[in-house]
Image (cartoon, rainbow, N blue to C red):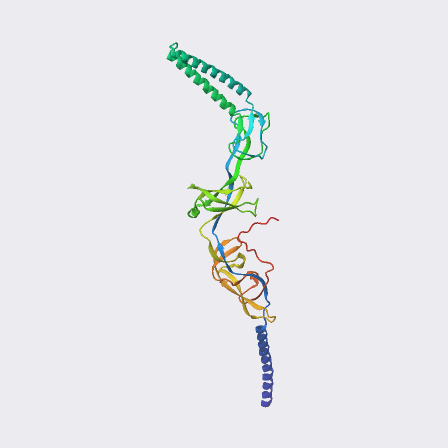
Amino acid sequence: MTKRMVIMLIIVGVIFGGIFGYQGFRSYMMKKYMSSAVAPAVTVSAVKAGMEEWQTQISAVGTLRAVRGVDVANEIAGLVQSIHFKSGDNVHAGQLLLKINADSDIAQLRTLAAAADLAQSVYERNKKQFLAQAVSQASLDVDAADLQGKKAQVAQQEAQVIKKTIRAPFAGRLGISSVNPGQYLNPGDKIVTLQALDSIYIDFYLPQQELSRLSSGQEVTVVTDSYPDKIFKGKISAISPKVDPQTRNVQIEAIVTNRRHELLPGMYATIKVRAGKAKSYLTIPRTAVTFNPYGETVYIAEEKGAAKDGKPSLFVRQSFVTLGPARGDQVAITKGIKEGELIVTSGQLKLRGGSPVNVNNKVQPANDANPVPQEQ
């Protein structure tokens, strides 16, 4: 019995030893396979971090206003006799625009002028008689006063006649006419708008905390959606001495050169004010930054050895960064990366530290310092 028991125990030991040995061998081979297996490379886009010059700018939206602009109107009522302009004409200062019928006023002027001439003759005759002591000083004084009164009436009537001739108060471009010959005009009725467009104002508002960075003569650039590819240059002409107590904003006025008359009063435009000196920052696209509760990170692609096909083998490492100012599609990095390092700009969701990558830049994320909306 003892011998049989020993043989059985030996057999059981061999069986269990084989089982445990097999399991250990399988585990060893699995670990060896896993350690030798390489995860497939992730295709990403990447750019090299480089230094770029940044000009600090303050942006706002403003409204364009003519340096000189009026709605030309009549001062005296009457019928339109003739119109001497066309809608959209460019006119010079003093150019005749419109005449109001002044026949009765001219006739009245002639009557008053005749009375003034008679008063002049009477005064001259009595002046000679006064020297001959034929009339008194009192009579001569009455004649002089009558003459002055008659001349004043003539001057008043001449002004009345002149006011019925409407002229351009300054050089500029006319708008669309709102009158016709034979139309009766009341005092103050609009005839046509006149705008001087060689230069144009833009009014905009900025928060009070920006006042320390603003001064008269400071350069500005203006962009409007009417001409999205064109930049207009100008300077700050005035800063309001009062801050709005409701919004805590201050009104700023800038004057912009407009030689081709492309900018028109009433348009809105985006204005950027250059503030301070230009600075250099290490710049990357905004899409390269990954945001998480622990801070902002980027993936840096680095070469480690060579692949079997002879191409460099790239692997990524994650690095925490400190962000600086942002502009358009770009952001400045003040800490965490170095100039010339290859930064992953897309495909970060598939990555972790040590992941192999292939760089394919056929499609790159936007990296424009001053992006412009695209209309489809």
